[in-house]
Amino acid sequence: MNTPHDEQAARELLQQSSGRITPARIGVLGILLEAKAALSHQEIEQLATQQGLSFDRVTLYRALDWLVEQGMAHKISGADRTWRYNAQTGTAHQHAHFHCNHCQQVFCLENLQPAFMLSLPPGYQLEQVEVNLQGTCPACQP
Amino acid sequence: MNTPHDEQAARELLQQSSGRITPARIGVLGILLEAKAALSHQEIEQLATQQGLSFDRVTLYRALDWLVEQGMAHKISGADRTWRYNAQTGTAHQHAHFHCNHCQQVFCLENLQPAFMLSLPPGYQLEQVEVNLQGTCPACQP
DNA sequence: AATAGCTTGCAACTTTATGGCATTATGTTG
DNA sequence: CAACATAATGCCATAAAGTTGCAAGCTATT
Image (cartoon, rainbow over all chains, first blue to last red; front, side):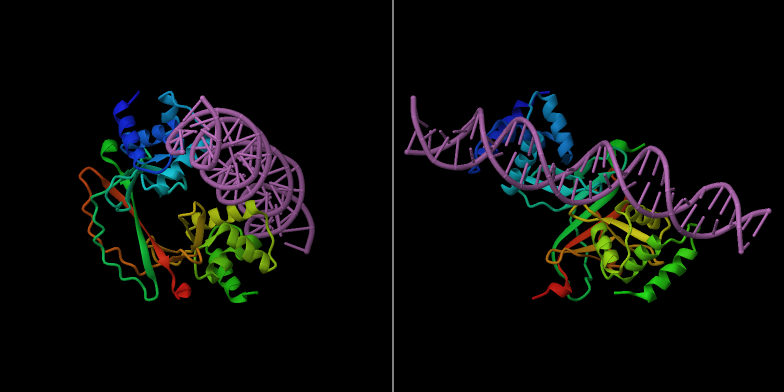
């Protein structure tokens, strides 16, 4: 399934960086932009193959790392100890993720304001908060 | 460094289970009881070696899995894609972990009540909440 | 159009974790 | 106390995820 719209969007985003615009980066970013959930490396590779794209596993790793470095993608560590990536929209990421126990997909909940008051023990200096929710996503409800 | 006190405590805990009491299980549980932070498989192996204990890596994996199964230990997945374990005290685990970015240790914050109001988007059914904090632990403060 | 050097592909390697099977040791029974 | 059933262990190989080095190719610039 080709998605020229997302490919175009990917191109435009890439042109705002100082790096080179390559098929791998266009393809990967396009796939991330199109995705509704955070994708694992494996899922991205699979989608790329379905779209006729083909690049090495290592290239995918490096493209993803580069996208994260450039701030175009976000890297989250799921409960299954594999990295998942999603396109980073302009707004700061809220780091709230929902892992569906049925379809195993990970969704980013952007609008979830973590309004929790942390009564952290003294001495701990907080730099980042990560909230991982688990349960059933809307599509998997009975 | 021997710690007969923790070894004794480990023995007593193990006797409450239906499994067999073996040197590996005594050693591993003793190490977990003694530890102030959640330990990775690698760290446990290292500590065991320091205490003169010696068992196979696979045995360590299985002993840890068994301890988790028996409810004597808790298994958490850190940000670096390695499992970490800590002794499970009687109280229910609150699933709040603090990862120190300096010493890379993971501490369990038992008393951190997640008093946050979740305005979850409609359709999501919540089953479990996991809070991962990152920052600097007391020992690593400047 | 030519060039510098960033990207890619390939192969090998590391780390983390799991599975199979013979051997050992634990707890129990007679 | 000795023998036994079987739960654990040790060692083997294997799987999956991720990284590194280097030659070859491609991108963007001059």
